[in-house]
Each structure stands twice: as structure tokens, then as C-alpha cells.
Length: 331
Ligand SMILES: [Zn+2]
Image 1 (cartoon, protein in one colour):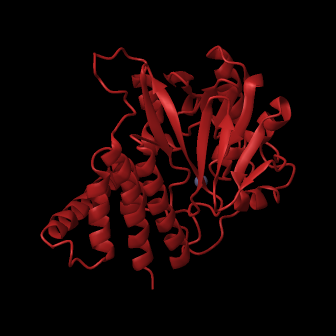
Image 2 (spheres, rainbow, N blue to C red):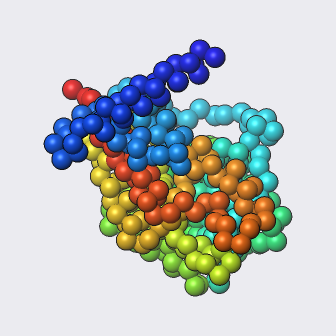
């Protein structure tokens, strides 16, 4: 109750800041942290309120000390994380948990897996999930890791060793991954494809994934653009590879994050992206949307993931403004 009241107060403060900013001509508006938070709130709208809350209202910044190495973790109660797999688009399948996303992008020449969850979840969700959906895990050709944190990459080594899938990761994140002890949860994948700042494409059969380097959340964070089919429509997804501000708190790091958000926003715009995805369900409601996508739709009713170009742009503007607000608030 207390934290909810605090949250309400913070949201009201953000609303007040927003109302104030609207009275100031934007051309002459100084970029202050408060004005940027207000701008981010407008850009977030109702589609991205959860992400706005997390990175603008109550960012979980790290206070200058490096993140400690992940401790060996006990497997949480399955009821707190397990989610059934779902076909969400004709060529995209949700294999995530209630908390984190993993996806199978199917192509004419095999499967591309995007993100791999904690090690305890990758077997039940990705391997068993593909089988439950009538897909074959042996067809996994690529595993794309958006960034090297355990909640997204601990399943990579298993998919690589068991199925011969090629693991794709940002070059800087390979460096930290390869320093892990062999006893790390999920093991350590062997270096396959390292993506540098210039990005690259991953092509498999009839499908191309544009891999865009978006450092910030980690130095090697990758984001993606790819197409999904919804009946006779083809839609473009902008997949944002890293979100929270739990990196070492410095003006330089926030500037890197800010510039990546701008870069990814521009790439999403150029590609005509009308869908934004994240790898935490709190940011894109993946688990909810995957289930809503199972419902019949009326003629002309949009896919639950389709939010339109303006809202996709709003997502990246919000990320940019929240990071810049943090940067400016530092001494
Ligand atoms: Zn992370």
C-alpha cells in the first residue's frame, strides 16, 4: 500500500511536470531532467506506461559499483515463471516465461531463436515448447542473444551444443561471456558470430533479421528488425534488446544509451516498424499479448501487438529522453 501511494505520488508529479511543460514553447524549451521526463511521459502514452515507470519514474540505477557476478541461483517455484508456448504470428512463436521472452522465428530453412531465458527455463520453455507447437528443436540454426545477462543468455550454450545452432552476440558481450567460469549456470557458449558496432544481417532461407548494435544496457546489446506475417499482412517488428538502467551510473553510459535509442528509433522508422518488442514481459506485455493473440478477431481488428509507427517511435523517444534526463541530472 505504501509503495503504491508513493508510486501514485510520483506519477502525479510526472503528470504535473507534463502539464507544465506543455505550456512552454518547445522551440525555446531548455532540456532539463524534468522537461525530458515530461516529454518521455507524453512519448510513452498508454502503450508504454510500464517501461516509462521503470526507466523514468523509478529507474533502478546502479550506484557506480560494478554489478556483482551472478550468484548460483536456486530454481524458483515453476508456478511463478512457467508459461505455455503460443503461436503469436504465422512465423513467430512465444517460448518465454511469465517474466522473460524467448521467441522462435520460423523460416523456410530452419528456426531462429531470439533470447534464451535462465538455464532452468530454457529446456521446459524453448525445447519442450517447440515440440509442443509441432516444431523441431533440431531445426534451430541461429540463437540471437540481445545481451549477455543470465536471464536472456543462459540457454545459449545448451542450444549450441545440442543442436549445433550458431550463437550471435554483440562483440563486447562475447568478451564478458567468455570470461565466465565453466560452472556458470547454463555453461559458456563458444564464440560463433560476434556483431560489432556496424551491425549485420542474419539471413536464413526466406528471412532476414537486421541486427543493430545498440550499446547501453550492456556494451554489446543488440536490437533487431524483422518481419512477421499475420494472415495476408506482413508487419515489421522492432525488438529492443536492453532496457533497464542497471549499468554503472555515468554520464558517458547514459549518453551511449541515449544515442542507441535514437539510432534504433531511426532504424525502426526507416523499416516502417509498427510493433515493438522487448525481452521482459513487463515492457511489452508479451505473455498477455501472446494469450490475447489466441482469441478470434473481428474483421479488420488489429493484432494485439500492432501499435502503429507513431507508438513505436514513442517507445524509442521515451528511452532516449529518460536516459538524457538521467545524464543531465548527474554532476
Ligand atoms: Zn539485462
